[in-house]
Length: 353
Image (cartoon, rainbow, N blue to C red; front, side):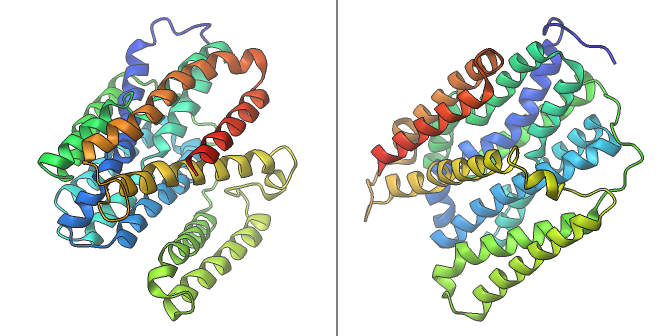
């Protein structure tokens, strides 16, 4: 397996990967200012719209674990193509959704396609040297904030004019371009565990467990915390998670190595990531868009104004900081980068509160 010392000649491959991950990402950044429009046009509630966001990000987490492990056996490029097809189907469901139920189904499929990020990183790691990987990873990570805030403004403008469905039309076009780019320009790197067995039982238990707990927590306020439905989701989810932990100890090819997960090298980083994303994505994807546009208890702004004032600056920071982090990490240490970011997040949320 050859390695390259820089990114020379990798432009088409990187562009294909950027388009592939962008097709997923704008479904988070462009839709945020359009959430009030989703609620109005589908005749649904804030709780249901919030659940669609919750399941979108939950499936993103599960998809990255599941499809990344599956790519060890089936190859990175084939799974990237699968992700692109899943994203396109999810987009089409949201474009033609007659109700919130179909819309949520589309959001679930879109969330699964977040594995495109992980698959891109794994592919780059197999192709590039550490120096080249840091630069390329910074470029891909920058997409995690969208198109420098332009997509948030565009999402707000679309919501104010033609409605939220136009956002998913844009995402579909980008996803198709990403699919074509991946097929033509991304190398088919060798599988790393061609003979391994996929732990479908563990994946099912993990998916059911996380879904049950998060849906119970998200909907408990509207269903009633002592209702049979809420308790069923919460207790069922916890039972599935317990089964997942037990099953991983005896699985031939576990989804997650429990011993590694419990080590001091793994759980602090995992906990930091969960808390950071739980706060940041919850605020950016739901709280800020709804509060800024709510005329009764919020600021009563239009979707595009809310995007310009609150969402675009956040995305611009991400676009600038991600490539910078990719360059600085190998030089000053990734731990120092993580600690600095955590302190900055804490200060930002303190001011916002």
